[in-house]
Image 1 (spheres, helix red, strand yellow):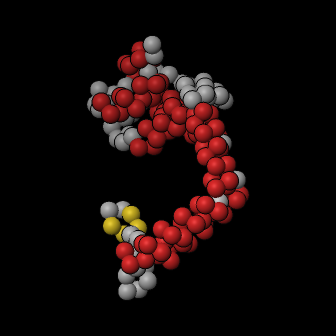
Image 2: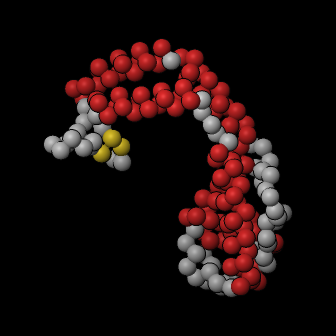
Length: 162
């Protein structure tokens, strides 16, 4: 299993509605595997470390956006389509400041891009799980399992390991 797949499995297990799933063997396997995958996923997520200068630059961009964002009468940022909105009257000034900052911070941005590229490559490497995935047989799954639940659990079902 690749590092990227570990992150996907964690997301599957986290988002999976476990209602209707019962049984000692299934519960044991789920508990063991969630712990194992969760620990490895935390290591994988922790492997992406941006340089301090880039983190500071991101904070500068965040503050710059907040200064130029559209706000309500109370001064709170306005959200549309789950995104903060840039004030149209301040867009030109914002774009100019961002362009200047990008030019001045070119080396920092390039370093961050190199870190991201290295992390993408890391995600394609084999994961180093600290234990073995606990598998179960199809017969230990409840009859009421949904296709989505089956797909999320497929990595731990013996008959589906080919």
